[in-house]
Image 1: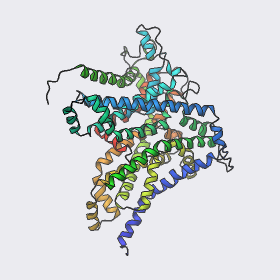
Image 2: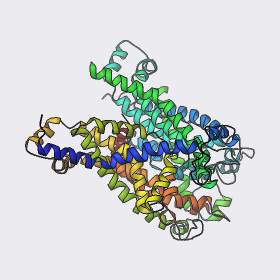
Image 3: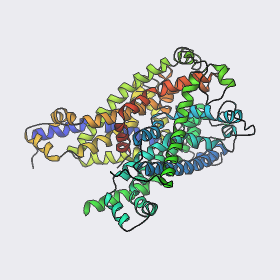
Image 4: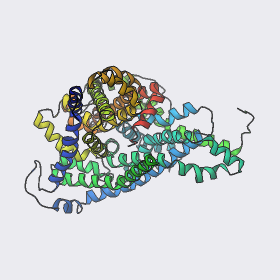
Length: 298
Length: 287
């Protein structure tokens, strides 16, 4: 078939229009990832070098106490942050969905922190949790002299304060997405359950939660990418301290890229993060793609 | 609706939970506000929850005009304007490119473009740290590192997956017949985009603009690395005011500065209401 001249022109224009995306994908995404991979295999310090050292940087990385601590912190943080956000957000959505009064106001209150930056979030909570002037002091002034809430300066507890602050910021998001999911559920299910005399909580546990699977998956994807990125909140709230007690991988990488001029070690760290993200999300995205294909065939 | 419902214990439980949660979510905003209107002596001696006794706007003036961000003591107004200058192009350009990408992907289908799109979607999950060093080098080579065009380019790159997805999904809900009819009428790539698709896109442009303004305004790490000393956004300057100042900490000024920095996204949130939620849902990578 001979192509029409205007069709050819449009094809050319399509590619002109897609040029920024093409460059972004090939250079900024693919190119940058491969470049970081390459740097992580060299002995680069401030500047990239061509001397390959195999996996030596990765060995060094996993012998580095600060890195291991940051991974441990991230795992602890990630599990707690996701679990609390999902539970709190889901409960808020379910309770709001019980035809309560002031629904609009409540929704606005639960979600506004999500409009705030992690920097502002970290700074507010730093102030609230500051033992000298914050909540601890306020409770002591009310007469409870021995009351202690100084987690932010306690090496063993500081990660929990980061959990509190970021849960405050993000759980409204879970509430909003879950509420949308709940509102999408067919009323008929509730009628049927009522006729059969099944208690409400039972319907939620056995019917509604499984039906909200896709919503839970979306929330999980959003929250877990947030976990891996965790940097701003820590930088603002604790600067990784006290000592290195709230160190996280993203901060470790930033420090080694810009402060300590060890780009090879930083790149090795960033590749570990990337592999973690892929490991977490690949199964989920695969299942979704397969479900969609099944749907399309049906 | 029947309003004769008895208020049973379950109902009380629901309200108790909702109200206690509301207090938890409101508390930091309340503390920020009252702290920012108190003089320092009152903060040192008083209770963090207490209402200001001698009400003052001094901290707000100081935060805006003379708080120290590291070396300079000119308040965070400079950061405010830097953020404005970063946000405006970093909203317009990504939306324009997102619309163009979404349009090309939806109506001018080609296998190669679909493959690029798939890679872009995976790219959405790559942590910024992985791309950080190469992007610094690339921008430095182009002479754009630590400049306004540089930080705008960075925001455009990092927001491209979401923006493209947003417009692609939106355009795919537009009937193909509409496009076919425009083709038969002799419309080409550019004309159909400008005269048919863009005018249809107002709702999704609003959603995208809300997401982009909020996201770019709240960004910290990209601004810190790529903007350069003369363009540091408000979030970075806010953190400098609070965490790098030596000497006595002026908590009232700090809280006023924090509110100033959050004012733009909070205003957008309170004004846009449901649109904001729509953005969250649409941006929640439905891939």
